[in-house]
Image (cartoon, rainbow, N blue to C red; front, side, top):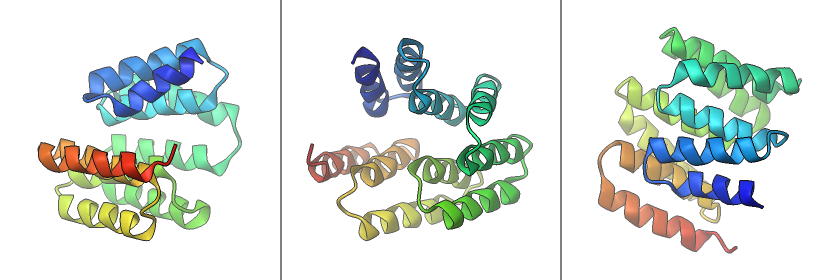
Length: 168
């Protein structure tokens, strides 16, 4: 569908502005799709547009009684109020309870970068690839990390590895 294409464009967009634009277009074309809403909210949050992201996350929690949404909302509350250790603890609890979830890994990586712990984030992302080298999303997360740390050649190489890992 058109919404699905917009969502795919948001995942491969080169900058936050384009990621947000395509995610918003996907969500606006299919407002019943929870995943499009979630992606749109996440991209806004990762681009430091908290005031726009927070209402979307609240909408997610209202639509679902799943613990996933509760953890995400708690994380956002803590991170926005600069309680970074509590935010990381929420992500760790969610991962322990629900298993690895790419969105939580992306949020954790962003927070580690914001708190000058890029070395920890990089080790964790590489560890995820080592555990599951067949999952393209792991490569995409590492490539986005490399983009944010201004290592474009590594980002490009890692995106390529991700495309090779994705058999579809």
